[in-house]
Image (tube, rainbow, N blue to C red; front, top):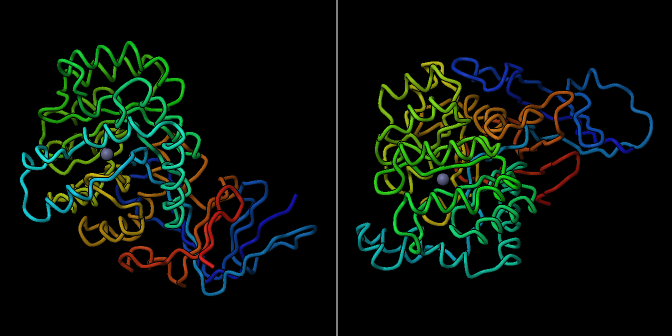
Amino acid sequence: MTRLLVRDLEQLATPSDAPAPVRGRALRDVELIEGAFVLAREGVIEAVGSMHDLPSLPGDVEEIDGRGLSAIPGLVDCHTHPAFAGDRVHEFALRAAGATYEELLAAGGGILSTMRATRAVGADGLTEIVARHRDAMLAHGTTTFEGKSGYGLDRETELTQLQAVRAAGGVPTWLGAHAVPPEHRDADAYLDWAIEHVLPDAARIAVAADVFVERGTFDVEQARRYLGACRKAGLALRIHGDQLSEIGAVPLAVELQARSIDHLEATGRGGVAQLAASDVAAVLLPVAALYLGRPMPPARALVDAGGAIALATDFNPGSAFCSSLPVVCTLACTQLRLTPEEALAACTVNAAYVLGLGDRGRLAAGKRADVVLLDTPDWRHLAYHLAGDVVHTVVRDGRIAYSRA
Ligand SMILES: [Zn+2]
């Protein structure tokens, strides 16, 4: 079996081996090796170290010349909505011209417009679309992505979205409670129907369930009922919470021991303290806050209080049309007041934790061989170069999956 050796790297940076999720001060502990190598075999990292300690390697070895490059773990995007048809560029332009939310809805915008396009596109179309988005993420260094449903909101399209994410190698999350589709009377009637008719099959494909807790969408009582049913069906729990207002999503996430609560732009001091004392990961989505002109989530307060954070793109057609985790890292360092080290841990080892994947997110023997080579001798250019083309080569599962050349 051929080995893969990345040799003569200027620098290798990886989150340290603190137990996941890495929290508080430990988020800054990045191991740095100058003049490094990574050796992989059958999709697994065999050894990482200094070139001085490179063992002699009998047999076939495929080599990558790492001179001028630095290496970080494959990036993990733990919150995306890639299974949609059409786009919302018209809405984007209207918003840029000062349109109100009501005017956008009157112009046919919002989640329900994406729902109509997604229902119409069919299984082959969705599979092709998700694969295309996966490849765009890969070119930015993302080797593992989570993908949510939530644009079908009928049985067939919800299941098709989950299958399309799985077919593209992603981690599917059933966002059955994203919005109330027009054919149902109200949120309660829709949830009754979704739990009875979609959940049993969704639970066979997805690994987690997610709900949008917000005024006018799903309240805490409805979310508790939906997530309770999803947990019984074996799914991990995620919550879109505190994006626009605090209506009790954080206490619910802690009560249900959710894997994560995502957004948190509106979370105040009480919520920060409660989250930091829990095992619920806070997934921060600065692109969504930037896009919508909302306040940034309280990242610094969460970390300083000892909390576990992850970073993700929230890639979606309405409020975060961005598939680049390096851009998210720049926003983390400039808008969330995180250090490059904290940002790296948040979109590698901690993002993998959110997805229940303990086999990746660090460069160490025994981990999956997912490696990003940056076209710069200092890995911190990952965050430093805003929207820079810093990704040189991506190794996924021990094979070269993307190369800029
Ligand atoms: Zn989202």
